[in-house]
Image 1: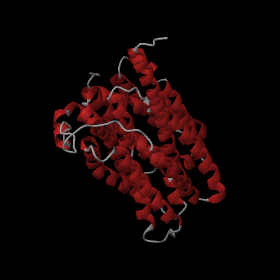
Image 2: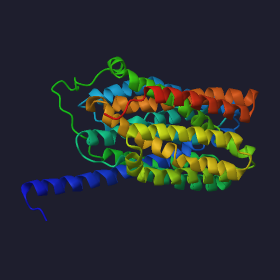
Image 3: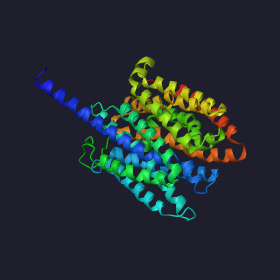
Image 4: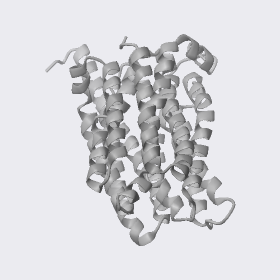
Length: 402
């Protein structure tokens, strides 16, 4: 055993890294436990409260449009602020979402406040995603190896458990169980975030002047921005599927219990792929190559979902989450870490999240309209075409890892 000063220092760093990773696993798991209750069952919740498919699409798109408008400002503030900590921003947003969920529990579905409250909850969940990623990447940028892929993988397992639980309980307790699950898990999540150590920034002005503003960042990272734009097209098809999965499940004669099991299975395979991410990156050579591979897997999943005529085929399509979303999420995070300045990490993560959020807005608006006017299968075919366009742009503009 190395008892030198250097050896002791390295041992202490290793202990700190493990402690941070375990704490971050708890944060990711608790966030996805709570988020699953709402995001995984949006169509189910609104449909069973008397809203039609078009209104479901408008609700999802409105919430994510709000997220698109506020994410850049939140990311810029998080990158530049020294005095106001990132974890406080996350905790404040999560607490507000819980507050609105409790109000919604006692609000009648026919009330004019019902849909706006639900939109606010989805918005507040969505805007947290890049900020939660930032909790880990700030430490990673400072040299501490917080294992994001493992933490995100355990988050997927938490999502899977909650999917089964909510899907089962909803049969007996109805759609309100989704809000109860969100509020209870969300409260523990807030406490976990507040107790998480945050990487230190230094500045005499209260802001890190080395961090770029949004326009400067976009101008200096043009190819990165085009790659993020490509991911908008790629993720649009996945967003159509996730936003209207309940309708797709019903089309193959399934119900809310089937939806819960399907979400759980997809989330479970994500854990395996995220645990295996270091090996996938080694096999494919770089984070950029993993992004390309997982993006191609999104296309295969879109095709199988479009062609699914039975519950079994739809399960297989969801299993392809292993190759698509499961590798795509950690690849994005580590790609930003390698290709974007440490002073602009939250903005880099935000633009990756921004592209997927924009895809959700587009998919929920266009998907709801197309399903109503052209039918479910034509809408899914439209999604396949979007993925093809995104792949072409991505292969042209995505830079290798630096």
